[in-house]
Amino acid sequence: MSQIPRTQLRSPRLARRLGASAALSVLAVFATACSDAESVAPVAAGERVSMSDQWIKAADSGMSAAFGELANAGDEPVTLVAAASPASERVEIHEVVPDSTGAKTMRPKAGGIVIPARGAVTLKPGGEHLMFMGLTQPLRTGTETSITLTFSDGSSTVVTAQVRDFAGGNENYEPESAAHGG
Image 1 (cartoon, rainbow, N blue to C red):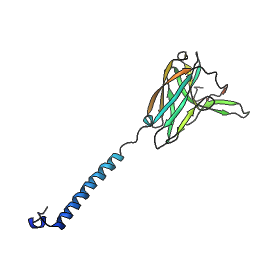
Image 2 (image 1 turned 120 degrees about the vertical axis):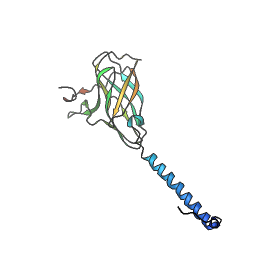
Image 3 (image 1 turned 90 degrees about the horizontal axis):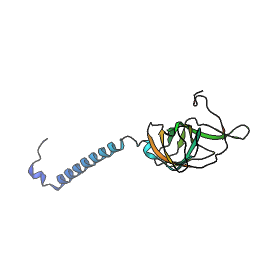
Image 4 (image 1 turned 135 degrees about the vertical axis):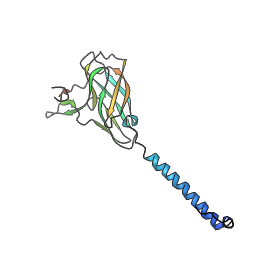
């Protein structure tokens, strides 16, 4: 780097050039820092999704179901692909659809549940829900149990749901042979 003669350092034009050059250098460093911050990995689905008003139908044995509202705070859709709970051998994602006669039929939901960006999905009796298969213990009214929700990006979150009395939606059950081991 060549040295600038002392007489030129006092020049207003040169001072402006040096000042502008310094300002551009600072802006370039700032822009690089910002672009590095933006290249950070996206927030995992398990950190963007919350569940509210969650509850589980009381049952002594066999099957039960969990309901509530799944909300996605992120800018991209999120897919719930699995769930688990210590209260049952397995938890499946289910939907209720009308069959050819119009009767409601409950079945595993292929592909999981998509929660829209900045949106919500309600898990409810007679609709999409989490089906507890092979209860490991009775689910008594007023108790709570945990549910681990797993998303398509591999992340998960754990929620706690209260057990409540509920008579049920009187749906028929249509197991999917691959999902139910036979």
